Structure formats: C-alpha cells, structure tokens
Image 1 (tube, rainbow, N blue to C red):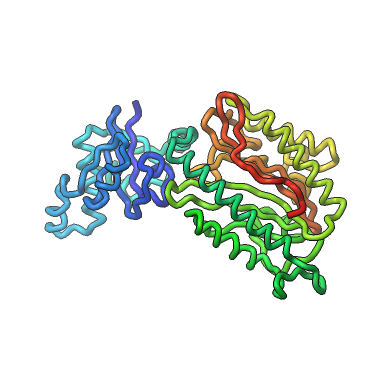
Image 2: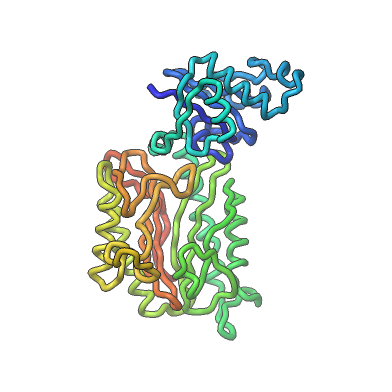
Length: 378
C-alpha cells in the first residue's frame, strides 16, 4: 500500500479536502501509512476534525516539539517542516506519494533528510473520482442553489420590456451585471459562493468562457453558465441554459434543438466502463452530420472557433473541472463519477447555444442531478 503525504490547507487543496471534509484555512500535514491516517495540525482545529467522525487520528503540533522548536529560534515555517519530518519518522514513512502541488520547499527538506517524496497526479485524481457522502451531499446542495438562482434570474427576464434596442426592467436597463447580482444573492441564500460565472449575451455567447458584460438586447441569446461552490463541502455544481427575451432567430432555434438532442443522446450513453471519448465522439458525429465542424472533424493544428469547438464535458467535485474528461483524452467512466455534459453550437459575431446538465454515474446508468427546463423562453 502506497504511503501518502499532503501538506496544504483544505480550503484550496482538493486532495486534502477529500480526506478531511472541513474548511481549515491554515496548511497542515496529512499522512497515510498502511491503513493508518493521521493529521498533524494546530490544537484548536482538532475538535473540529474529530467531530467529523472520520478515521483520521489527530495530533497537535506540540506533540512533535513545536514549542521547543520555536524556543530555539526557528520560524513557524521552519518548525513545521521539522515537524513534518518527525511525523514521517514516527509513523514509518520513508517513501510517499504526494500531490503535484506539494510544496517544493518541503519536498526538498524531506528528501535531504532521507524521506523520498514523488508526485503522483493519477493517484490523487483517482482517489477523488468516486464521491463520498460529504461531497455528493454538497454537490446536490450546490445544484439546487444553481437552479434557484437560474429561476430568479428568469423571473427578471420575463419582466423585461424592449426599449430603444435594449431591455428594461422597472425602467432600468437590464445588463449582465444586474443579472449577476441577482444570481449572487440567491447563491448566498443557499450557502454557495462564486468568484465568477457566465452571464453573457449576443455575440459574447460564442466566446467560450466570456463571463459577459453590458446591456442585453431583445431577441439575442443569453447564456447562463453557473458553477458555484457549496461552502460546507467545498464542492461545485455546474449547469448552463440559453434564453432569449423576444423572438429567437431561426438559427438559434436550430442550435437549441440540436443541443437538446445531443444532450439526450449523451445521457443515454453514460454508464460505468464507457470511455469518455466515445460519448464525446457520438456528439461530434451527430453535429458533423448536421453540417457543423467539431474537434474530431477539423484538421490537425486548425483553431476551431465555430460549431462544436470544445469537449463534451468534465468531472465536477472539489474542482469545477476535474477527471474524468468527456473529450479526446483516454479514460473510462466509473460509478461515483459526477460529470457535467455540455453540448454547444456557436457562430462568431452571432452567438451560440449551450445546454449543460450535471450527471451522477451509477451502476444502473446516469442519474441526472439537474432539474430545470431547456426552453429558450425564460
């Protein structure tokens, strides 16, 4: 069995949050040797970790001579490096796998003291594939909050009126910024946070992760791509819908119809053991049959900006983009994966349509965690 070391804070390091499902803002050491799991951290965090009821043995820094090290004139960082070494020596860790983000400074110190550390991205990404109970509950909460935010934004869209080429609500111009404030308010009510998310309009909707800005016009596409984080679990949701206030162009109506069918076809294909690339391929083939370029039909080296120019989807959990990939890379789906499935069609200077659902892969097939209409009308 591979020994494991992680040194980070659990608010930013998904590898650590997966093992200790609690927001701890200061870096601490997590260690696995055989079947034993240990956390070495400041004393005032120990009760919080123990309250989780997980099989991690907690140890205060003082247990490894923290006070004495500081009294010798060491800085806090120097003392914590020494404590990490002492913990490895006490628990018998001579060689360990670490995440690719493991601090270089600490890695060099441990290596110079006889402890081998080696980054193993595949190991740590694989450990997070199957969501635990804390993570899945958080993802479900985040998804419900996403849907509530989308519904509140759509109420504003339904109240909008055309005025001099823009939309107004209660006499004020309707902008992406105003819609984002509404969405952020609902996120807060549901215990979610988001540094960024997409509310774009018109030609902006054809530009990947363009977050969106400015006044919204009648009859143009409006894309909401929401990916908030549940504060309690640190886990994300991810969903996208496309709307029009007024009369959508025939081109956009066609985009929406094809994206909806592509999404349905994708969901029918998702199950454990299926390669993510195969689900991506079936959508690319479908769009190509209808005259759109895709990642699989373009020439090598060609930069694709229209049609279906991105992958079909990605894993979602403690990161908004994580394994597995529904794209051109290798890898099969496993029961316990949560994946965002997001077919889209776009044309530069016009805009686009994207629909995205969040899906749990189970032994019996897909469970769609998203419950929201797909219509262009808000």
